[in-house]
Length: 481
Image (cartoon, rainbow, N blue to C red; front, side, top):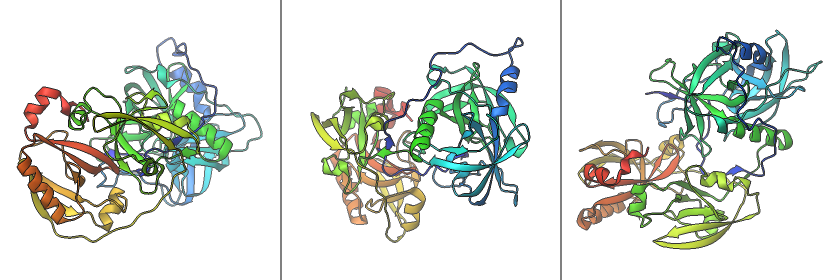
């Protein structure tokens, strides 16, 4: 199933970078009365709002291509590219003086930007700033008269099944509208620490990227950003960045030209029942640390992979308040108090918020090796330079690329494309270490082993059970994604 992402959201190594000190921006927080016409259609809303929706064409430089979330095969770019006429996409005006929101990948690297309105007028667009982490960009145009603009709505009032309309410039054909419903909320496509997309069943195709998602009250509740299709060129599900996040980012870009972010240098994942059972954390709720960056605040504070973060400054970490979002209000230089669970014992740890670093490099390929784990045959190869670049694996991570598996299928377990770095806490820098771990686990008679892997650019803990069917029946550990 091809998964085509409109944005080129780089898979971030430092998963604790987030929005700091959001600026208050006026939005409609209460559900608004429906503006659907007497026939129940969006016709009146579309007629009113289409003049504030824009067509964007970029020239020169490059347009960022989409990325397949499997990390292996490239996907089509969402922007329509009728060479030599540049690439086309969408956006929308948010102020009478010409501020425009679109996707970052639409304008990132562009040599020039042209913005066209429904009335046929075109303007040169200037880039105020962009944020690749959330795929939001802010442009500006200068017009002789006040421009029509759209208002921000409240995505928190949305429910699955609510009707919405997508406004955009599909295939560069001109401004259009497509109706649909909210198919899901808070979707994580594993492309960024900030993923909580609104999923819609309205047609979202090339050229729609950056356009507004509108509710029945006539307000912007999302920015169209990604699509998932079952086959090359097929129309599938659309995904939009929630308006509250887009609004905060746009405000930061207007004030700073960028989005200030804090950093602690740790990646994490939700603590599922299966992981809790293997980490002596039954009954706890939070996120488990999967990686600590070298020379990072997390390392300085003594955080370790396997630590479970229960709360930040007393606020619980859970599905609706993820670790990255709880750090969001903490500016660089501030100190956060983390409530931890380590080896069955609670503790507190202070950590200072810093700004994010960067860097990376690596080693040589070797031949395929076959190993066995609980009857699951694993064919692995050392992660070489090319693999590291493709899968966004940091230089200090040593591991083995899983090429294929044999034996019984293990739902929620290891999968081809995973890079295995640890088995039951044992690091795997070389073949000897892998063989040692294999032998140790074979003689331990354990029911399960906790594997640490790199998947889609992020570190994860994955349980591997000796009897997956029996375990699934007992704990439901394989119900999570």
